[in-house]
Length: 69
Image 1 (tube, helix red, strand yellow):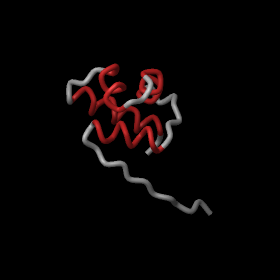
Image 2: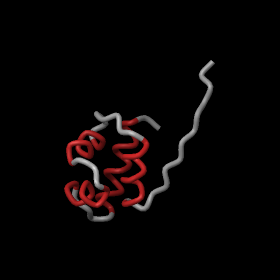
Image 3: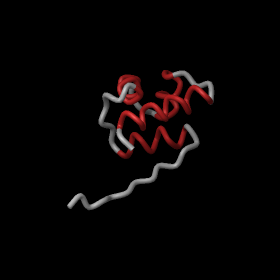
Image 4: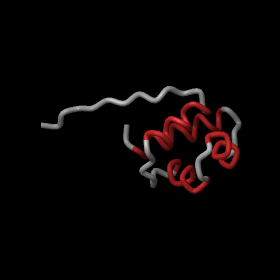
């Protein structure tokens, strides 16, 4: 998934749950600016930040590493 897809997915989930951006930022203990940028696909958040947001949204963060060559 690209960062744009992750941001869009998290935004859709947040809206489905009826959570505002400021509320999600507070619940996940992340800056509102980070959340705004993530949802627009403009941020490069750490795994820690993504995990905090995923937990609040009832999602599981799964990472994979692929060899490119």
